[in-house]
Amino acid sequence: MTPTEFLEALPLFRDPILAGGIAGLCLGLLGIFIVLRRMIFLSAALAQSAALGVALTFYAEILLDAHFNTAVGAVACALLAGGILLVSPERLRTTREALLGLVFVGAGALSVLVGSRIAQEAHDIHAILFGSAVLVRAEDLGLLALGGTVSLLFCVLAWRGLLAANFDPEGARVQGIPVGALTTTLFLVFILLHALATRALGMLPVFAFSTLPAMTALALTSNLYVAAVLAASFGLLAGSGGYVAAFFGDYPVGATQTLTLAGLAAAAYIYRLARRG
Amino acid sequence: MSALLETQALVFGYEGAPLLPPISLRLSPGTITAVVGRNGSGKTTLLRTLLGLHSPLGGAVRRSEAFVPGYVPQRTALDPLVPLRVIDVVSLGADRGWDFFPGAGRRKRDRVLACLERVGMTAHLHQRFQSLSEGQKQRVLLARLLAGQASVAFLDEPTAAMDAVAEAETMRLIDELRREHSLAVVLVSHDLPIVRTLADDVLFVDRDLHVALHGTPKAIFHSAPFLARYGTEPGR
Image: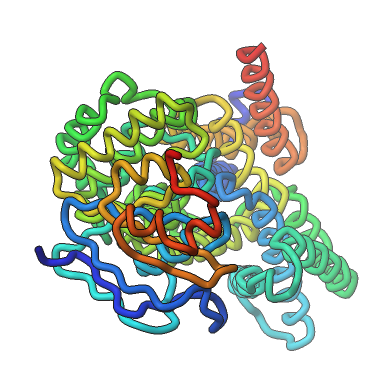
């Protein structure tokens, strides 16, 4: 397709480009705290759970012959997964990573199982799992924009508190900073945005948006404020630009967005190694 | 002199089991109280209980209205992955409660810069905190404590992993700051000769001997439980 043809078709693809940009920007920024907390696989477990929520909603529609909003199913399942992950791992004689693994494989297997029962929606399920959806529904874009606005506002307002809570949690508590409330709100906002983005764009790119931009930015700079701007920019670039690249190359969208970010991360690590060398 | 913090028969521990006998302490402005004892004897848990991070099992902790805590935790408590600059670390220390919203940071900037100047770290403002030497890190953390306008400084092994010169400089700075700011200092340390020189009073704790002795350095270092544990008084 030529650039002229693309511009002519732009009204059709405007929404997925916007959705990719919003998800990339907001999850890229929130991802800073997820990477710093060493909870990268939280993102994978949440995205997988949100995908399960969408599959279960489709299944419920068939069983009950009614229409439900798939975003509600995605948010509900992601919240349930978040609740499981909040259980103290020490009480279960295990680790946080083990719980994340349990949620990830459990939700993944259930998604496949439920998907096998709803053949007529198999394409949608596949799109949600791998992020191969070419179009985004206006309803999903609206919800994603709302979730993105909430997450950006939270990041801007609570930035210093979140930094203090990450760097020295006990010192922050001594200063009276509400570490528990900030951490809980961060996870709730992350879960909400994850679920909405997974419904709109699919699991694979959402996992990538919430981890790779932050990893790349943190490898490039020692200034956390600069890292935040870089992470949001990388996410925005991959979310929107990745879609355009997929369009011109006729590649799957989610995989192109993910590979764009993986390429940036690899380049950042090579740069870091070269500087050290 | 009125106490900033006072404990009466304070009992602390985990899951209902006390770590040590009841402790009665009084922290007054401008004084240094050293907490000494072997590793695992409950020194850090005592600090956390005094700070309100850990609930006591019994007794009372009274904090006056002038009590503003500042905490320098053990070096391993600070996350090395968070890429903060020197000025960021001290700026974050200036926040209290919900006062971390945008704009508040700018208002506190002058105070933050003054604190960094006081500890001699102005030349390192934009350097990454984790790249500093242990002595420099402690200076920054003391500046963070000053920026928070603390009236009581809780310092958990502030000279751990330092060479002798850095250790002496850090202790000298702590002593200067407590005089200038009338700080009450609670100092957990294994460096007994320095404790002997600087501390106004000492709390010696030992879980195995089940003792918590509080008194002047001379009295504690001559006490039978201390000599039973360390063999001789410090500096001999």
